Image (cartoon, rainbow, N blue to C red; front, side):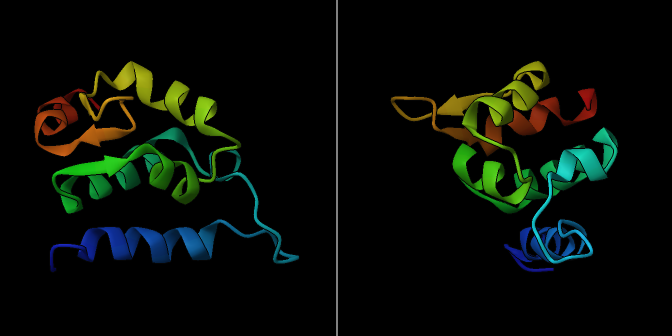
Length: 100
């Protein structure tokens, strides 16, 4: 699996799982258990370096908005980077994976 292999597989999984029978997008969190979202997030965290934009996670995990995405990420104890904490610092946040 290449550098982006995990993210590509996660995106493919999301594309298949994140659609209702009518083809309309639906909230990933309402269709999958929290553990599945954490597995997908973990895959993205391993695949992206040095940082994973919160906006990418918001789109890929089908959150309604950035506030909902940050509410999901907040209890995970992640490290952020950038002047406005707009990205997850992958290297520093990997230490938090066992806590998931």
